[in-house]
Length: 78
Image 1 (tube, helix red, strand yellow):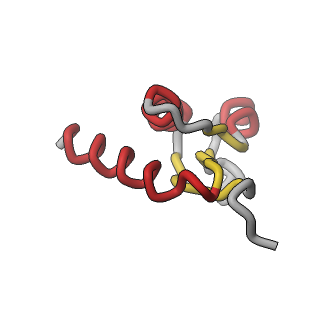
Image 2 (image 1 turned 90 degrees about the horizontal axis):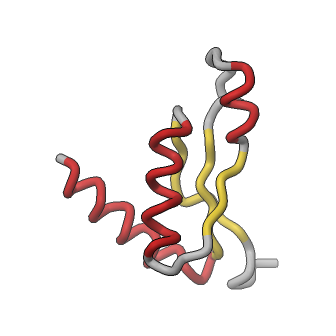
Image 3 (image 1 turned 135 degrees about the vertical axis):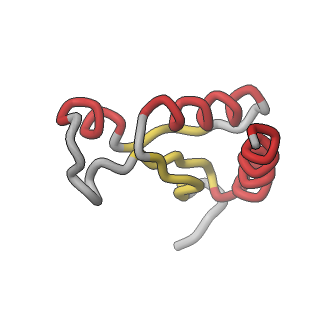
């Protein structure tokens, strides 16, 4: 069942530094977000694909705003 309270993956990262930047940008915009699999990626420190990918999750209701924020921040970095 899809509801606005379901968590969805909005982005995937290969390192915790970039994952935390995305997380911080969303939280600063007032969008609740969490990282999934951060511990596994940090503990092992070697590629364990697909297990080493850090996923950024938001509520389904926030997905459009979150995408806009992440897209605008990545274009600013270029």
